[in-house]
Length: 238
Image 1 (spheres, one colour):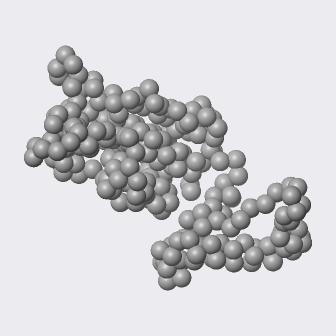
Image 2 (cartoon, helix red, strand yellow):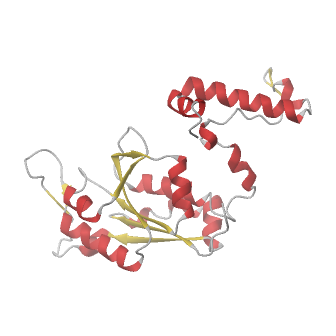
Image 3 (cartoon, one colour):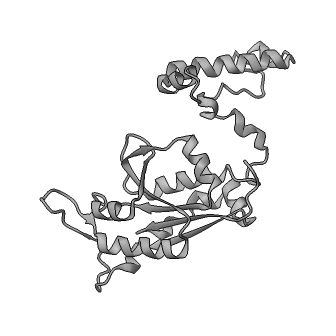
C-alpha cells in the first residue's frame, strides 16, 4: 500500500459513544492513533433527537416485537457526518449486509476513511438506507446486540493496513485471505512441547522447502475449511 498523504479517519454514529475507543485504544491501533496515522470521532445519535426524552426509536409499522430506529433522527446524524466529512465511505453494520472481505477492507484502508452507522433494537427504518444509499456490511451469519462491536472490528481491520501501523509490513502478505488462501500453521519455541514437535522442514534451514511447505499447508487448510475461497483461488480469480 502506498504511503497516505493524509490522516485516515474513522467516524462512528452510535447510541453508545462511551464504547469507543475500546480495544482500538490499545496495541498497534492505539499507537497508530497516538502517532496521528488515524483519528477516531464519535457522534451520539441521541444528540439529534428533538424531544425531552431524546427518543431515537419507535414501534414498527405492521406490528411485531421490538423497536425501530427513527428515520428523522438517524438521517440528521448522517447529514451532520456527511457535511463535515463528505468523502468518507458511509456504512451501516447489519447482519443482512454483504459479508466483509479482506479485499473490501483494503479498499477502505486505501481511501480517506469510514463513517460507520451502528444499529440497535430491531434495526433501522429502511427509508434512511434508501435515501442515503448506504452500503450495508455484515461480519458474518450471526447477530450482535448492536453495531458497535462490529464497528470496532471494521476499524481495526482497516487501521492495521495503514502505513506505519504494522511493525513489519511484509507479514501482511502472509496472512489469511491474501491471495484467497487461509494462513499456514505457525510454530515457535520450544521445539518439543509435551511430546509434540515442530515439523522438520521448518528447522531444516532450507528456505525454498519452507516456502513450498507453507503454501501446501495453506492450500490444504483452505480446501478443507473454506471451499468458497478455494474455488476462487483454484479458478485464478484472486
